[in-house]
Image 1: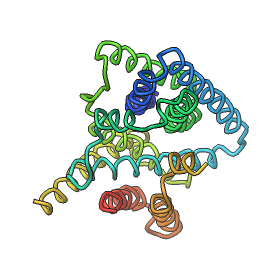
Image 2: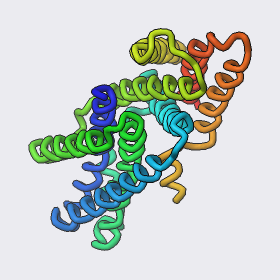
Image 3: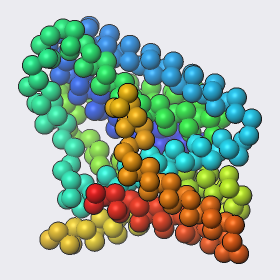
Image 4: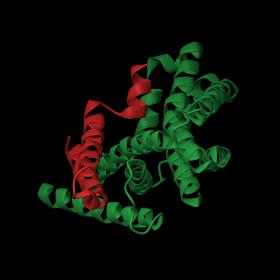
Length: 233
Length: 55
């Protein structure tokens, strides 16, 4: 359960940092009150989606099937984040730059139109929050701690807002790629464990296998990134 | 809708990588080499992540 909460908190933290950059860019055009309104509306929509997703999955009677579906989504999510983090670490892809993202957003003409800016803020928070939603629902349903996972996501939002308040600018110093790499490895480990267990595989050391899978993913991911980096040099 | 789906599932390449790795593991579980599935799936997914990093 603690692993699931940490994974949710870190995933949410990374996504909320990106959402905060969008909110900040919009707030400078239409004011904090309207920008915050758009952000809160998007969070409310995510809350409804979380409740609907949790209730929908809770009605699935076949627990093995549910575990397989949740595990597959986690694999899909984890392999994507890990692949992206490896590419960024190896220099195959540019690191995500919040300051540059902020400048690009401020350069958009629509950001000065109140309605369009509100929509940018709403869609931005909603899209960034979708990955958080997926993790909250998937991990929450599987570990039976959806509320705790949702609280972890909200705590990450509060932390990002507090950091943004003190930074008074985009949160460019967050080690986003390291967090994405770590979360990708963790989520992939959980997904691998649950999918194989749902298919009837008996893990040799039970749930401790998740730690071994996480270690394998970290070591493997670092080795792949290093190999790609050497090839580029 | 497109952004919604892409944010949640990535593109077709991501889905293919995940589905083929899980498919191989599921097939392996029906053979006498079933015990190897716990090693094959993580290795296949790592290879998949390495492939996705380059594409």
